[in-house]
Image 1 (cartoon, rainbow, N blue to C red):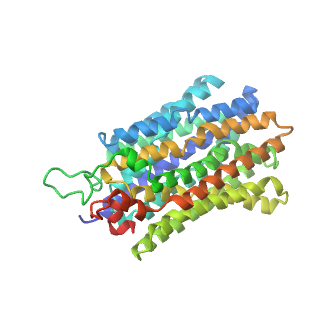
Image 2 (tube, helix red, strand yellow):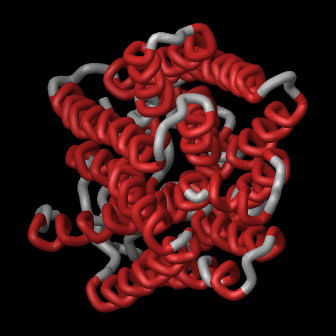
Image 3 (cartoon, helix red, strand yellow):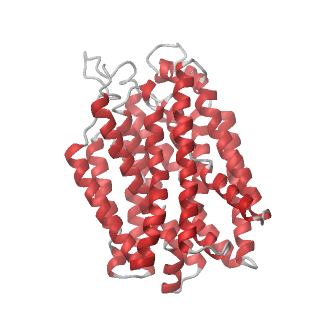
Length: 433
């Protein structure tokens, strides 16, 4: 099957925009945290509960939609998600209250739970296996771009027009994207099970294995662990980093937004540098354990070490560097954990497994924001509370990073899943060497 770049790359651009909006939606609450807490007179614990409510249905919806993706087109799934994002921003425009904020965040989390995995699944339908690292990096870079662009723009809206204006602007943006996608988004030719007698999807597209077997192999478990550690830091940064910069480092809203954008820019550079390198290493025949598995564990461990140092550094420049590494250095995990998972999963089951991996890997969003709020309220000072939250985050990341480093071995696990060494399994194909 000939690769159609003229159709594939415009779809990739739309999916990057989809992820940009996705992460702008996630970050808006954190960027508006200080004025919201002041206006509604809510405690750190209550704000943390509001932030964590985003994850209440996030993992469950990602899991369910992962299985639905085998029967419903990616075009319909992404369109429905984007429309729901717009609807989720509306409650606080009519009633600014804790219940309204929570209702909006719960709906937004349910609608965004499948976003990363299903947009990656849609992307993989347009790119063959030996061309996926760069588009995967671009898809995940939409997250970095979302925060990079959202931080200054949303902060400007909040400062100039009030925090509600940011929610309204994101609702309109989501709706516009959904209309464009409905007209132009279509499913690609790769990764479908072929009809009887057809060879259209390539080897292995129709092969199916028990989900228990797929989910309990080391590569998938290690990929989940890496994503779990990275997601803990990501959830903490979305919910609390803007407030930390303003209350602990005495930054103005614009300076805090600039630093958050700088962290996202660092993530963006890492994503665009590492993933094309992975493609090149795979084409040279390097084991995927070392080209895309080990980097996940190393990234989470390094970010965890930087997080460990945060409470003990006072000098401004080293502290800012540590913040960038702690909250931006783990970004490469998100495209790579899909690559390593896909290497041991038959294409016909990829969407469902992606949904399961995303659901389990993103569970920290349900815990980290609320737990941080509790630590802030119970500690002797906010400084001590943030120190405890950083050290807890570091512990989680170090454990998860080591698990990913040791467990992700796509060639080994592909061999166990297809002991005969047949060509039908995706990891047996050249792209996943």
